[in-house]
Length: 312
Image (cartoon, rainbow, N blue to C red; front, side, top):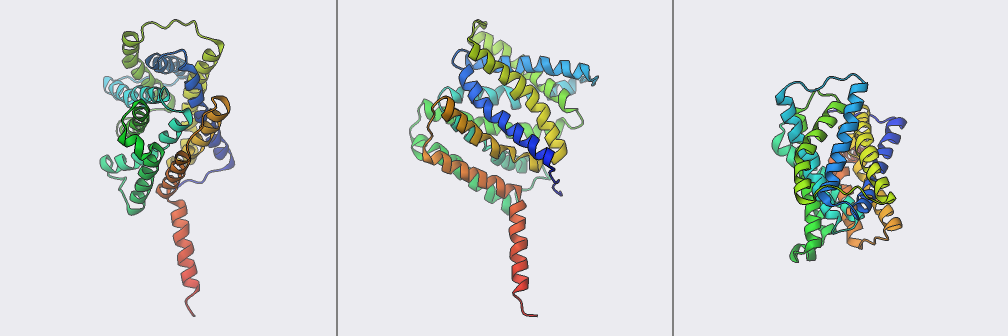
């Protein structure tokens, strides 16, 4: 498929989306100081669902009518929100917010691999295979070989973050198969409702009722997580997706980690080892290879140079 060209507005919106999602890792780290993992996930998906349904009503969009569609949305909520949000939140209780964002950037790598398994039009070409290998190498570099050998809470936190990326990849396949034709706002509200139905009883059972007596910093973090990083980010994401195409939208994963790492260093005084930055470079290179544009440009340049060197 031919890739869409990005105009200046699409670039600015993609950079804004990257900045929003880069900031959510700091907001979650701050909120987790007072709100337990399961409760924070439930608040995020529950409040965001309510806001999005209000948006759907105001814009007069049609609600899902069939049980088949609702079941697809509930599964999507489990794959794309309930499980990965919980795994990432748990990961952030054990590792730095910047490191979480770097591991989360591996989503594209797992999405490429899983899509090739389940979707007939997403073949694993030699170029994509090289990208997957580079990405896997980057993830292993970030974790470190010692963490793979010594199984402790820190390594468990990193494994949880990787597990979240796998579920994000599965969610992408599920959406392609069962959620086509639904408006972005309705699909977002529906899946967040589905994840709320799953997470609410779990959080009540494990964490109990929220106290709501949080500090101002925690409330501000929660508002950012719900309104900015979930509601606004989903609406902006689908806007960028429609304007720039899926391949271009993937580039947002290159914007998120530098912002998250910088905020973690400035606000939380986090320090990441050099291998984490090297790992991110490998993951970024994997995305560039999977995206394919620089690959094709290099081949064209090489072919042109070769052709010009032939005597005429």
